[in-house]
Image 1 (cartoon, helix red, strand yellow):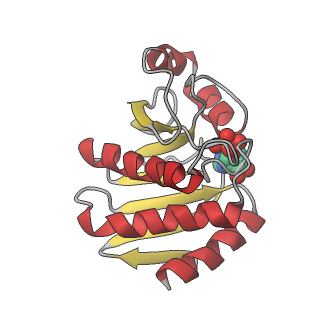
Image 2 (cartoon, rainbow, N blue to C red):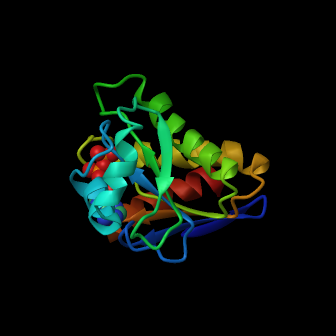
Image 3 (tube, rainbow, N blue to C red):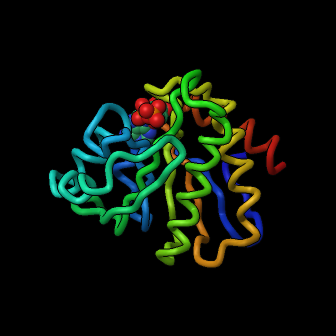
Length: 178
Ligand code: ADP
């Protein structure tokens, strides 16, 4: 399963770069606590958005694992960037709850800002070491719990880097929504 519709909300998987999603209103950053440029997703987003992004996020930092904050999109093709700090696997506990909080809070912020289309990367699955299938399960279950109460969000996209990551997400999507 690469796409599913739940309570009129489309949830889809797409292979690509989170910093290149021009048909999306808000992209989610797998941020670091300092909300600065980093490796992986935070590197791609900050490079594409430009230095004004760091100017804007400086006053919001630091953030805690499970927390999310919102900024403008700057030079990205998106109106907003929602910055989530995922848990470092094996260090920030309980990691499943903290990861779920990222998705919950990002969706809350999207609703507060009347955002229709949001795209997530696989938060915590890179430098932070969270196993991809466990992280996907947390992400989809959290989305599933929230879909009935979303008023504005109508598209939730998961942007994955590789075909292997897509395959893992397809299986878990089937398990959670199938
Ligand atoms: P974290 O520190 O939360 O683990 P990372 O940015 O290191 O975040 O990685 C999160 C996931 O995003 C990993 O699966 C990684 O392969 C993937 N990734 C890295 N760069 C990009 C990108 N530009 N677009 C989409 N996914 C990306």
